[in-house]
Image (cartoon, rainbow, N blue to C red; front, side, top):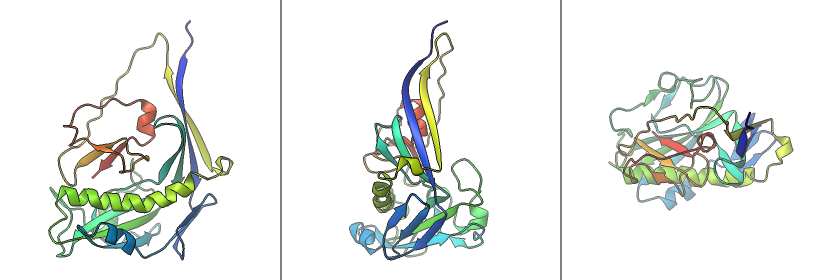
Length: 254
């Protein structure tokens, strides 16, 4: 019997966050502590053509009975440490997710076919694929757009870039985390199994407009910078390896 051929290995090392708080510095550590400044004026200024204000909120587990503006996304904080997408080493944090939300200065919620603003307890389904668990902390990045821009694709992309830039400073710190300090490690192999059937999984992604977009191969897992929109690519098919998929090559921005 022919031996299997291992093409690539992806190692994902997780660091569980237990303390998330506002502080005097933007710092994330491998022992589970994440602090950040409340002031977001730097990112408002950098994207002032479309953004009026950005406010951060820390939502603790069980504290979901509160108002939320339209939920734009749920984003994990992950970074490439070594190798290309789908191979090498990736560091990610567990226990916390970033949740961008949006509204304009007139109170118009970000939406295309409907808005998910309201009571967060009702709008966000926990413990689903791609959503926080019951015991996860949520960092809400609440974006106020200039009047009428919450439905404009270019403005939505600028907002995502602002969130991505804010997250990137923490990703840069995570690249230096000691791999031995990880709370979990998972190794995934792209393997050719000789004599077995070849399997192709087809995933349909969305590519419609402002709030309904999918980006591929950003510089960082589930990031924005360096990525390409399926809309700009004409919604043509994209081939991915299983490990590229695991490694955040697809960012569903909706």
